[in-house]
Image 1 (spheres, one colour):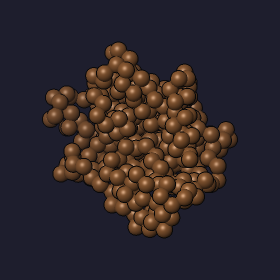
Image 2 (cartoon, helix red, strand yellow):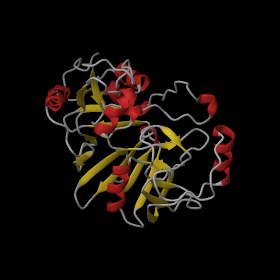
Image 3 (cartoon, helix red, strand yellow):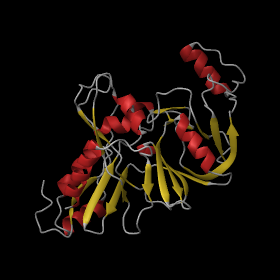
Image 4 (tube, helix red, strand yellow):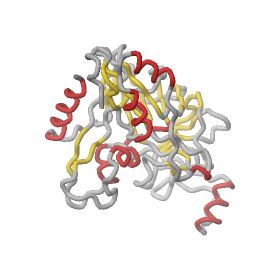
Length: 314
């Protein structure tokens, strides 16, 4: 069974040193969308989930979702933490930049190198949602200045008592960080950019732009070109039908659309096509419904169409 191979490889990853490119994957084969393996990290004295997320270059919320019950700020030393590095690719063309809002990840498909690079991101908070779009990079800016719009200046003044200047110069106080990629969507007000704050990657914290860690935006900035395709999607549930008959589902928490949904547990309804397929292949549909409820953000095996009947039971 594929799940046994994954468990064995995960144990090996736990005992091996951290890869310097934890977010780099080989190009997917034509018959699979499942990439990578999860890592198990053993918490050391003084560590918390944000520091672990930064070390492995995953999002804070992704790490939190994968480890329910673990205290994010004071995890007990010796605790086993699952680092969500196995994933299912979104159902899109493998080219350019793809941002999946629901999973708070940015994918860069490097066809020349035959690699897929995946980065955690921060996106627009409720009320300033990052829009779904098909667009391209219209401008690359090193050490950008920031001209806060009037709405943001008003918000800072009313909520934080901070008077923003008309222009924030490049430097350590600039919230755009050291690099920015302007998107051609709308009036060009949306950016993929760095940040001057270490916290917030993997969360809904921005005014609509896409934030990346400083080292990640530096890497991406050097790789992409003006005119590069960018697609922003919202796909909380992803499914992969593997060549050996295994079926995996990866579920993320759906985005809240307005303040009335903030803090509420939003569930994705079962897809009738997937439910029918599971029943037809003698798989346990209960596991699928459980994955939709748990929203761990980790690919979960539903069963195996090639296995004997009953092998997929919980």
